[in-house]
Image (cartoon, rainbow, N blue to C red):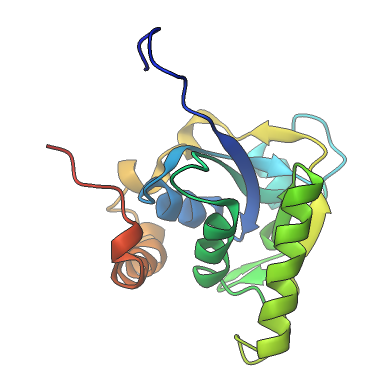
Length: 189
């Protein structure tokens, strides 16, 4: 919390679908310049969907995270570079063993500027074939974001012993921390 005499921190929000939101949230919680990460659902037609409804695949929503970040520390392009390098943006409606439209790769933009940056990065990745094949990430406007149920928040942090956390998220986090050591949030103290 800032003191009233200090200038409030300027923030922006990015809404990203990179498969399971537990993985994406865990990554962004460690990025310097990220103020908050909230898992949720976006891109579908059902109002206030539950996790069970979204997992059933009938709502049209994707599991997403809203990343609130300080653009004076971390640019939107930086956020997207981390996003694109920490999931497979070339698989249609799939991330590893998670299959269905709810696990699609998506950037849901909040402004024309965000759209331009996201489309530019997709164009660059496809021109360079950075992933060895074309990126299928959707770049679409954000309509409505629905926060996920409380038990999904900080899932990896609160459930490190769970099988999914040990087998999927922990290895992803080790790879992420090695690749982005310079972008990690400073250790407390």
